[in-house]
Length: 380
Ligand SMILES: [Zn+2]
Ligand SMILES: [Zn+2]
Image (cartoon, rainbow, N blue to C red; front, side, top):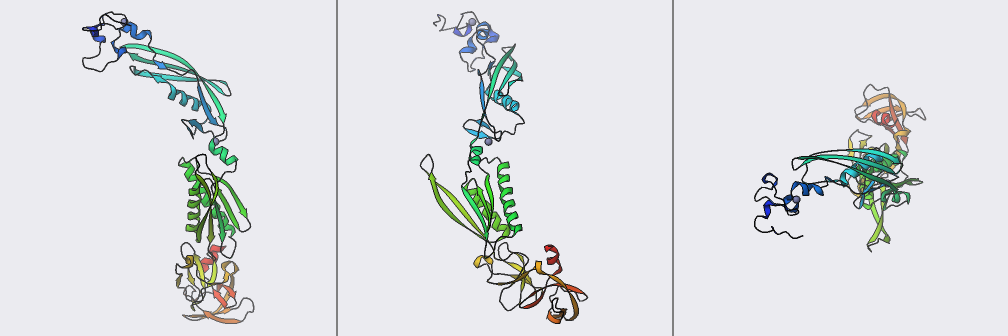
């Protein structure tokens, strides 16, 4: 379209209809302007749209977990129902004209059928000192699909396995339970932080321990580390090449072999250092315990994963109460052997009271060993 008044005083005339534009409708001198701003009100409003609305919106939602597909990924929206999701999606998709001020709007969802929600939108605002309003109806189609995560879980996908085993024994029921809890809590925390890649595929109780299959290598590593930090022992990892991904990268599945220590709290062991048996109190890091001859603290060196080369004599679970015949002196006490009822003199650890009538003991080939009362109470 040509305009004979383009040069010279064109700013004062509408570039479309050629009518003079009143001073008050013109942009301020020096202000940036575009074609629309130079138009007179009549021409400006002729093709003015307050709202730019799409003809329809399709929302992909996961029928498994309710996640919504946005951009190129699935996100958890925490919506109560799909109407909330539809309102959000429409709000995102609608564009309000940049010239409008004092904009207010309302959306009224109408459920048409299970998968269609009609959004009645009402907008108003002020443009060129003029109140304008506009209605738009946008159908939102809900497409029920399966997100990547749900698809992987359903397909049994996993990238690491944490195998919980124990040295020269099988893990106790308490250790099995705790290992599962550690894995579940850790993964639940990752999920709560919004990590959609974090999940447990499967947990299996096997004869010699527990196997936990996890969605990523890192998750397996983190869970294995947390289990040994709490329950003691060590971890070794073995990567296995499973496949190549679509970009030709090698994909590894990693086995994290957790080996819990040979002894657990409550075991009575003899470290063979000449100072007598030790009640194991803790195995996180190295082994710590109480010497049953004196009551002194015992702590193993950190070599061999902190587990000393020791013989097992028994456990607090084998403890029985027996009668104290007499406390002979600071270092000796005479007890009744709970099996033969013979009086026997054994070392007196400092936790045995002078006026104790009975004490918990365990019997091994090495003799009678007096246990601390609190250790036996903990085991019950
Ligand atoms: Zn005009
Ligand atoms: Zn899902």
